[in-house]
Amino acid sequence: MQTIYEVQQEILRLKKEHDVCILAHSYQSPDILEIADITGDSFLLSKMAAEQNTHRLLMCGVRFMAETAKLLSPQKHIYEANPTAGCPMAEQFSPEEILAEKAKHPDCAVVAYVNTSAALKAISDVCVTSSSAVEIVKKLPQHDILFIPDCNLGAYVQANCPEKQFHLLKGGCPHHSSITVEEAQAAKLAHPDALLLVHPECKKEISAMADYVGATSGILQYAKQSAAKEFIIGTEISITAQLALACPEKRFYPIANRLMCPDMRATTVSDIARVLREIGNGSAQELLLPDALMTSARHCLDEMLRLGG
Ligand code: 13P
Ligand code: SF4
Image (tube, rainbow, N blue to C red):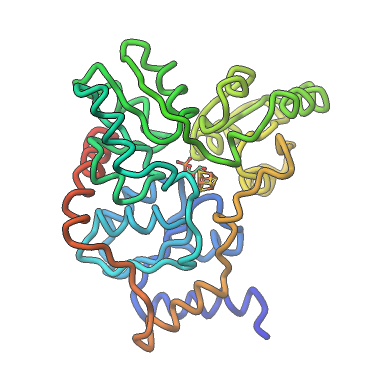
């Protein structure tokens, strides 16, 4: 049986041999982040997927991230490191349900969190990520915003764009939205000198208690640059571990130990090595989307990159 180090060495050799660019979301495990070519939050991965010159991309994250890469780069071959990994939020609503909501507010812009299926993107006006949502919504000409599917991120954007009228639905991340006020209070009580940093997918009561609310990239940057020495981290537990490695002189505490996304954790270095071997022998399953869906879903991602800067 190969050690993790040996699997990593095989990955480094195979990705070079087959000209594959490996993209990994920041929630992936450290052994994956070490061998990836590009690591970052959803917005950075989308942007970089569109800008890469290599014609094969291997996505380590969840399905909507691989779909986003395919929509932005239809000519490239996109592979999922683990095709079973999906974001449960991405399919919380059907396109029919959203179109019925849109019919109630005909002048609204449908703003889709990037954590949505390609079918939902196809009926949306613009996509946003948690790090680009406020900036993009502010730039939209429409006054009415139907924000799908995450009502917690939607409420955060609404608080930062008071000039717009928001219509929110009852969707959200099952993990971030499960954090309770009691858990946040207990963490603050246990670590009274720590700053509380949370992701905007958390409920607004939790964001209201925080010293900083921001996307994955924002939380990482804030904690690294802050003069403070202790932090309670209100997002996926991998970020707490990553910060502890990056800043050994600081202390990081998870807001709740159970804050783990099984889908984001589904991928292993062995999955990556297997897909690379399959690319080599021609048996890899490439991610394909129907042409009509590609055409209709692409527009809102192009708008995201245009308005997101
Ligand atoms: P980011 O946009 O911060 O990368 O978040 C993606 C995600 O799935 C958070 O749960
Ligand atoms: Fe989806 Fe939540 Fe997992 Fe992010 S953490 S991929 S939003 S389920």
